[in-house]
Image (cartoon, rainbow, N blue to C red; front, top):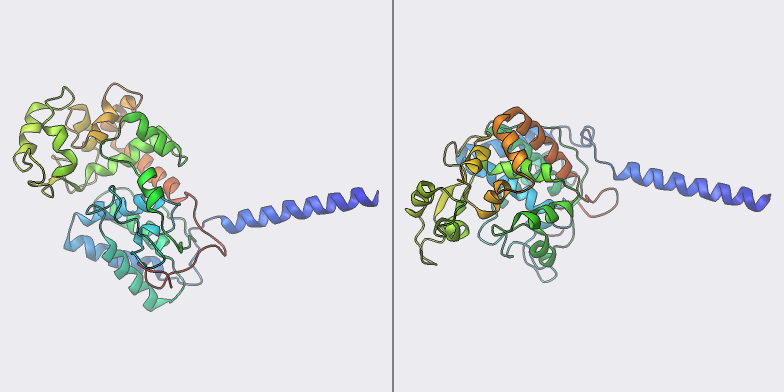
Amino acid sequence: MVAAAMFRAAAMAMVLALSLSTCQAQLSSTFYAETCPNALSTIRTSTRSAIARERRMAASLIRLHFHDCFVQGCDASVLLDNSPSITSEKFVIQNNNSVRGFEVIEQAKSAVENVCPGVVSCADILAVAARDASEYVGGPSWTVRLGRRDSTNASPGLASRDLPRFTDGLQSLIDLFGNKGLTERDMVALSGSHTIGQAQCVTFRDRIYSNGSDIDVRFASTRRRNCPATSPNGNGNLAPLDLVTPNSFDNNYFRNLMQRRGLLQSDQVLFSGGSTDSIVNEYSRNPSTFSSDFASAMVKMGDIEPLTGSAGIIRSICSRVN
């Protein structure tokens, strides 16, 4: 009897401990309500100023958050520079000379540190800046859940493995997103962020010179004007991912795919006779559905394996460990 009672008490204690751990690990939209009530408005001011200076920065900030969350979870590991103890993720093929906006996050972090030092994580700033960037260029807004903490390490190995590449086929993309708990619908919605932003010639050269059946001839011809056939000539030359409305967050990206005008191969495979064709078709006809699904997918992505509670740290400068 005594042994049974002790066992039940121990089991209840374990359940309670797990319950408390789960509660502590949950993100909350009001996480900084008491400790830094001006955090979100401060981040928003920095983000909007940066995009006002350069419209392309909106796409870059959304992408930066994505490239953070897909590696070790949303922990700001992508922001870390090389150091004696850290090998940065910035130089893997998916990031090198491509991912940008680091200085915008540092400026927002500095502004927040002036208001409430040592409180707001770089990972949370990334998440808020991505939302504010979408909203600024006419895209959806959403309630950002907060309470992430920052990593003390980076993982170029995981970055190389887990981040999508512009040459990926449909199944590879489905698998990469599925490994992060994201559905095909989440994947297509998140890919819709390519309705804004630009890509370098090196990422779409093979596609526009392929003479393939999956690319519109006139579209390919137009893109060739600023992307020479021979590398490295013009490797860094830019072209808008959405030729129609490159600076506005809308659903034209999906209409482009249906016309075989996806700039990257990894874009066009979303409408290539596979399982995601119907989602692309739906988003092309229903911009409000796309906006709603994009917002939901961004929230879901922001929940990928965050460091919470006593895990991780709050970095004072986002590019290095304290």
